Length: 339
Image 1: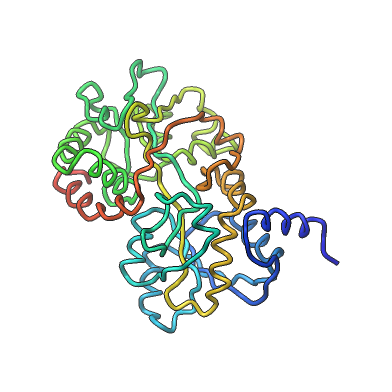
Image 2: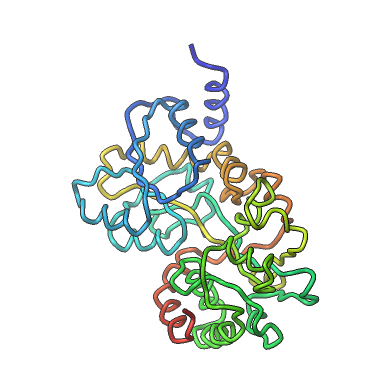
């Protein structure tokens, strides 16, 4: 007997997908998303469709290398990963195929899609500025402000090898040009409170410890500390303020989590169906509720932890443009002495 929950899932998904509500078979998913909360996405998809998900999880670079080595014999149907640069790297390696989906075209904004329909964005994180409210009277209001001399010795930020640093730099190259972005990077290096180290949560903890006054981080690390206890952070949230940068110009930079159908997918139809499911209202709401992310699909409600950060203007720069600028961004960061 079909459960009430299953019927509700079917109804919710059918409202956003122009395909039959039930299918069969399996799906081989290669994913570098390392969040336990994604389990709900997978189990709901299986309950809704009858499609069994076989998962291979690992580091994005390792999975890209694995799929490349497997070649035409790869069992992968879908590759999911975090950040535009990795999606583009997989595309450049020939690991995706173009697909034609009216559902994805209608649901996912064009600027969050690959130009050749090889990958699609399904969730976002705003990369914004945080500061110590007790020590910083005039926080930086733009990314460019991080380069101001008044913030010397105050900034904590990720290393140049980190994809988040590379993509924000790639976006600034698109907006400002390479020369101006290099000057910006050199000045930001001069404002470092310490050599780049650790993840985004470590940058926020640096504010709590007093090691730095200003930090750049993705929003979901802070929102997570609102929703549940994060050691060394949640108990001190009251001292941390935040700024969505460039609200009078380009808007706040958005990092992307997305995926595509593998080039040699043995279960191609199921792979397309899974991507369409990720664009459904139900799945989009869970990206926010389960992992404190912003939905990619406009109009989907936010979880309380994400909504607490407030409304803002996002940068709607085409994700493919950012991806194209990654090589130049890495070279520029190296030349600027950004470790």
